[in-house]
Figure 1 (cartoon, rainbow, N blue to C red):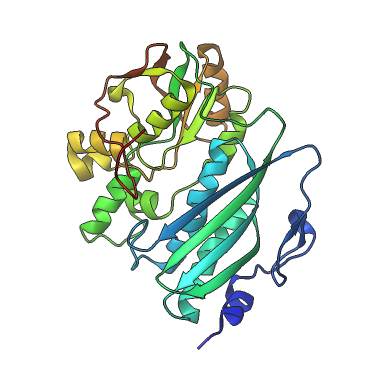
Figure 2 (cartoon, rainbow, N blue to C red; figure 1 turned 180 degrees about the vertical axis):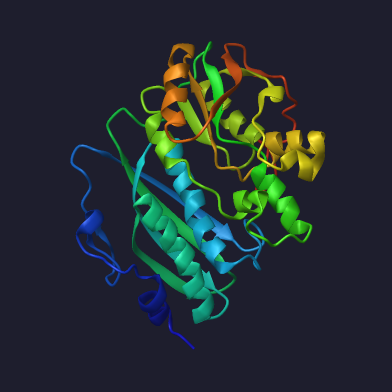
Length: 316
């Protein structure tokens, strides 16, 4: 049996700590000390992933580790931030060293891929849950926000939609092979950090798609005080989605399914070519799926579903 400190020191602490990566003091003290880039603005977000709410408890531990970090980093991507650091709170039903070691492998692998330093955290006992706070930097006035879309702007999305919902459907049908593209989209999402930074100075507003396209589009519309004419036929569908769910099911997954972690942006038409070229350099498509209007509301799709909510109730 491992103690919480043993779990941290043996499995969760990164291989190297110290001043590298802007961490002046990392794991092993009461707090972490960071050295932000002079003149940059600090960007912070937190997400909690709960077993059998956000991911299947029986999913591979390595995938759970990856996913817990990826969904938090997606928020930094939506603001065009450069990801720098994270801290994690891990709640475990038991001190299973093998499980934690494999979980940490997935978590640290994404840290390495994205250049993020794990600088601290906590381990406690309870139902399986992972809380991850991510921190990044963005130049002054360069952050992308939900408020900024203007009438006449294009509405566009990075990558492909519906893969998260399609992967969940395949998992619930008994598929367990992570070589399957839809399962990878669900359990191993890729935060669009490079795309977010590439869209600085071009996008007028942005949000990541976590709760479903229509739900997150609603947040963007509300924050910007605009309407949208959506073109559902233009939605870029994830590979294998139509084969898995049928044409109608695939469209609904793309509109309402959630867990895609793509970026939904608005941008002036004159910026579209440049934005598409920048993302093409990242091997990522940027697809126009509608336009921003002055008249409030949504045309082109029924917005009756508010998307995923932990506590359904009145919506402001």
